[in-house]
Image 1: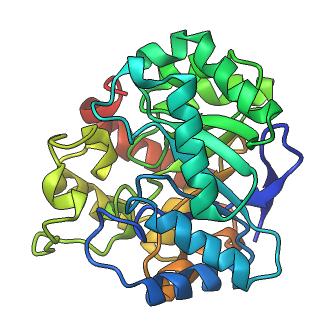
Image 2: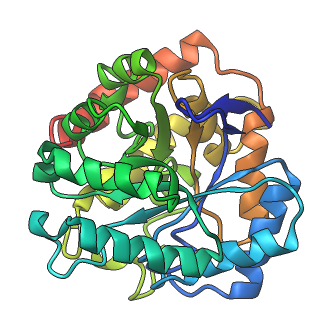
Length: 327
């Protein structure tokens, strides 16, 4: 496992970390015993950073992580998110009162006195232009409810605005072979300001695992079945905004670039780690085998410059027109 500094927190976190959306909800059926086995396998392999949210299974994911911490002696850092409990999810809901209530609920779920890292959960763009929201987060730090805070964003422009606030320690953003725009401007600015980058959707909802095909079936409660056109939340959160058939065709092109002994999922994760601005990728896992395959990607050798160029060419020709200027 590799470890990289997270912003200015002083933490060194695993370059392959663990995204805990799938063990909470919206990815089909999942059993807590198997989810816990996946979490333990990740820790066994050196993963020390876990990303969750208060809405993942209405707190189920947070509670599983609390149990993991009870059962392990290793240092485990947990990042959670707040804001998506708002109904409707509107700018005006991001008040100090609401944020405090969300934080208190997560503190209870995670069985802790202070959250390691709280992230605003993909708020509306307007929220980034409300310094009083970030002031409320500063107050929660002063009160000892949070150690640090960051943001989870949909758009590059939101990321650039967020890091103007001096106490933002991290930005979580979709970054994968199908979503390369963050590397153009944002990465350099984040490095300059020493802001951590958490690459979410690193496997593009499983598309970049290479395990999906035209016959793959998704449960009704799996967002890959119900959100392909953004019916429930931003469509970029499902297959990175790439239509299913195009994604499958592009994965087959990418498969020709795989080095010997590397799975498609590991290739996609290793590609992300080639960018030194990235602190970690946060793939999800519902089973121990998935957690192991993901974590092992950090141990693999770097991709060649030729391979990186060929990935970029495939992106430019097949994917860029579908996604690049939308997010």
